[in-house]
Length: 503
Image (cartoon, rainbow, N blue to C red; front, side, top):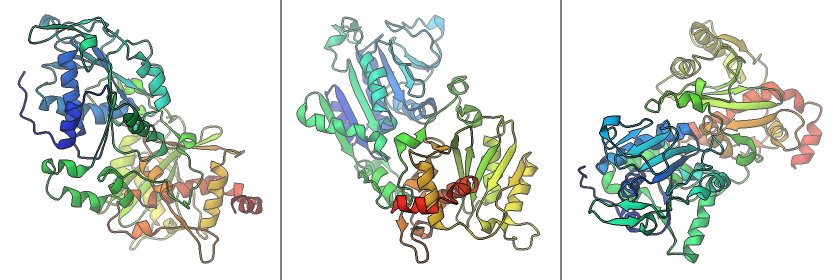
């Protein structure tokens, strides 16, 4: 096994030499998180032969499509090559004679096995209870701010208790008990700064570091700490393509404050967000990362789809929902940016993703600009989209019949009613993984005083040249047309009650 020459940046060096049993890294994008995860796994392999760790993610999709590929790259930097020094999701060839962990897994389907018997169990929080009953020797978590800490503590951290009296046979010929290894029962959380309240549990370890500095280490780093390893112009590119609040959080590692006076003030992550994947689909082959609607356990393939469309010159957005009994679920969002057009959104994004959806009926909502005829065409904008969907096997029902556009204050009041915990109509929920842009758009949409309305959505983000338009208010408009199209009658006859309740 040949290790490459690696020049660590300062935060990475600090992490490598830290001997705290709990290490928390709040690091910005581009800081070198995958490198340090690779180094931590390399050290675990050396210290704990035939031991067993867990790598925790919020979902298997996160582990398979984001964490695992970057971890494989980080391991290769440290001389550990896939299918030579370790295998993912399968046993090594029997004639290689590799040992197993002291407590081997019943199945290697979600397991990484190394040449000396050390192994890593892949666990996701969308499979509740998967970690219970394990006796493990270390914990790793990438994108830790996405995890639910209560579930993490119950299902995983409580199992970090195994093998104190096991013997580690080191390469230099020495023998020691695992309990003498400084990495035994270690915990490492790696994450960007939390963008929502869900991930703020990591901050408690920063407080714990002050009280127990020998036990807990908390390291913060910004992208600038790794500038020597980033391409020239990278910071300028990030600043030009990200909204200001995202740049501050993900590049400068500045912690965000909640937006004041938002247009959707009752949005609450714990109350309105969920995650629900069909893990059996993704577990068929860990070496592939096929992603389409078959992996979405929250989508009924036999029910029609509801769509909200917002089109424009710079970006075209599409939000998909379904309406099971008693619920309105926002299940997916898509977008394309200029120079791509609405046809690309339909043909390249929507159609492939829902190729296997059985009920190919879609109810299409949009604002009244969709009923304007295109230049040099007999079709309106909405009819053009309808025709493109029909070409690809979908039956389309156009839901916007014309008239005036909905008042901002009507949208505001309707969202207040629908998001209220006291609502007597359908409960609104958002798939937090598949509707990320919709959620960011809505939770960061400001409100302002209107000229002819009591309240308006502040849409100046749509005119910003430095803002990623996927995070501007376009997506929130696509969500609005679905909600108002389905529930506008809920507002009628109750307007005074609504207004009184929000003033």
